[in-house]
Image (cartoon, helix red, strand yellow):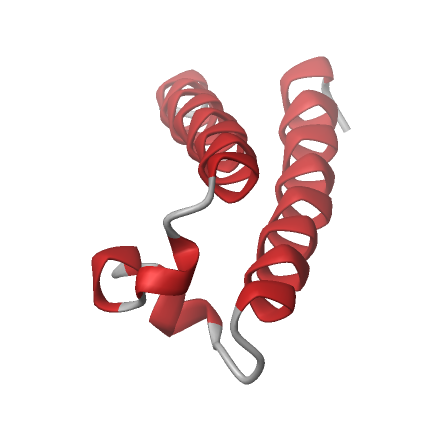
Amino acid sequence: MNELTAIVALVEEMEALQSEKVITLARRLKPGLTMEDIRNPHDFPELDDHDWHYEDGILTGIQSVLMALRSRERESTR
């Protein structure tokens, strides 16, 4: 495993942990929500919560980094 692959694996682990945190908090605010539901938070007024938006923003940042790393990983295998 090269260094870039190891970094991608670490960020994927971070993404999974943050996703779980986001859905757990969302379900505290409105039980029964799914990951698909929280992709459209404006449909659920209960998600108009500062803490939830903060955690969701962190998840979005992690996912952005992951996309960039995966792109770099693909480029390096060409």
